[in-house]
Image (tube, rainbow, N blue to C red):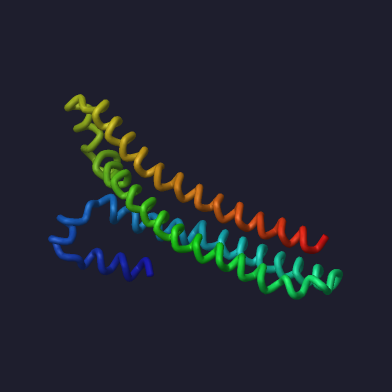
Length: 171
């Protein structure tokens, strides 16, 4: 996927590059590579660990407490209902986080990545203005990131409540 996107960007028209900020391009490529390198492996390992843990827990609980069987499907419904809500909002928050990261990457590409960016800022004595702009953009990006973390905790609390319900039913 990365190679196809790179090929399309390299064959893009000049109007595309005049409209698209360099930070958005840098953000999309760096996020793709980070997702494949870091997040995908961790997500698969986490999924497998949780999946087999849940299957094992339900199997042992049913083997020890057979009266628990009628409660399995309503509890699975509660889990899936919480997950559906979470996915809708999490996807949007992730998109907002990526949009907020683009101006930061653009500013980075304009200053540090270019040969004369940092020297120009220093020669024009615009360091304080530059830092305040970056801090303002970082604050905006962190709002979306914080909301994403809060939504993760929201799901965690719902899952913990369903787990407590399972414990209450089995005792």
